Amino acid sequence: MIDWTALGRETVEILRAYLRIDTTNPPGNEIAGARFLEEVLRREGIASRTVESAPGRANLVARLSGDGALGGIVLHHHIDVVYADRRYWAVDPFGGEIRDGFLYGRGAIDMKSTGILQLAAVLALKRAGTRLKRDLILLATADEEAGSAYGAGFLAEHHPDWLQGAEYAISELGGIEIDPHYRAPFAHIVISEKTGLPLRLIARGAPGHGSMPCPTRRRTGSSARCTVSSPPSAVPACCRRCRRTSGAWPGCCRRTRARASTRSRRRSAIPAFAPGSSRAASGRPWCGRRSPSTCCGAARS
Image (tube, rainbow, N blue to C red; front, side):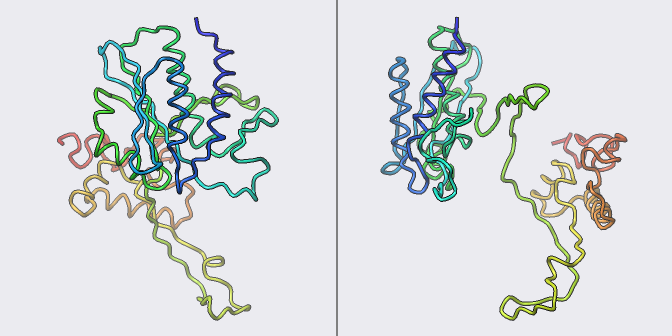
């Protein structure tokens, strides 16, 4: 039987200690965070392995074995955090301070909190003696904030065996938010981030130049009426794949993008064919065909 209240208090204290470890990237110093995690796991009798891709740039893995009936699950987080300018912090960014019911620190959101919640799950299952059908693989990596060359990239090239047997991976970011202002707990899962959003901007007005400012001439960017063409999200993913493969948009999607651009010129708040638009609500699919799955031969691929 798991004492969830006690586990919650323990998790908060572990996270506070983890936040006090400065793993700002650059330079990273993830070895300090990895050693901290290694010690917590060692006290619970869970073996782990730490490897440095460069001096101080450490990655850690631990595995809670199941019976192998199903593929493993990777619980991943990155140890490094971004720079914290103390001038703009009301508390020590590496103090792990609790104030007014909130825990403050660089990494409290991105993403040491996730790592410690994953660690707490592993500890709870180990203590309870839960019989698992899957392996749980706890993975902590370096250098996510600066390209991952010393972290995920290094592991993919030199230690793919760390993920042997894994079927799924849970990483940045998701959670369940409980707030007194919410009608119910709010669960969210991020499935994509930092994707490209190419836009074409047309501005009309009197131009200027930064080297010769004219106080009587308004800046084009701030005063002109602008037209923004619809982003690639206005067309289905299958058509975007076609473009990447062939270098050109399929005919159906060229028409879709043209219609979307026309609607944007009419200052529509919702791009054509976007979820929630009148066309989407009426059931008309992205490309005007019966189903996005049959668009551009996707069903045949």
